[in-house]
Image (cartoon, rainbow, N blue to C red; front, side, top):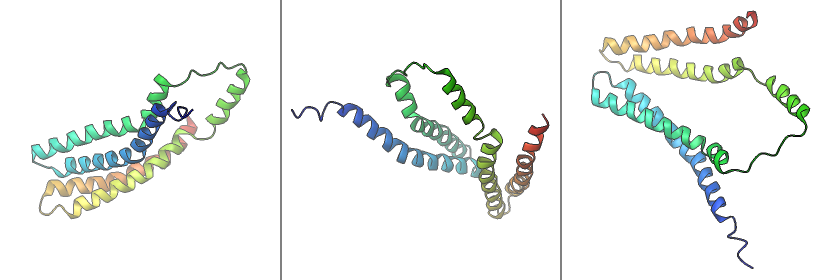
Length: 164
């Protein structure tokens, strides 16, 4: 009588854990990846500090992708089998309509512009906080000079792809 509640309790628990991992775990591990990148950039001559930043960057990026793709992996191995398709024409129409909704260049612009602005700001802060270290000053100036060049190539990319 009351056992219907516990029928899918294991599955519900797995879904709750996956939701918590995706909502909090990806954010926390993403922030720790950023901290690792900053540690890797900031460690100019300290090998222990650089190694710690590199390890943080690799470990937490792996953890980030595992948390982000855990539902995909779960449903791939434990999910229900897909039903057979009887109408192949509907699938072709769906694939054709999805193919025109977004292109590689649009995705590159959406992701690329904020990353390049962030790269310019990191270069600016790196340059301003360099002190008397000429190596740090050069690295900051290089980041600041490279970001507009990369932004120009992202802006130029659609015209290059249209000629191909």
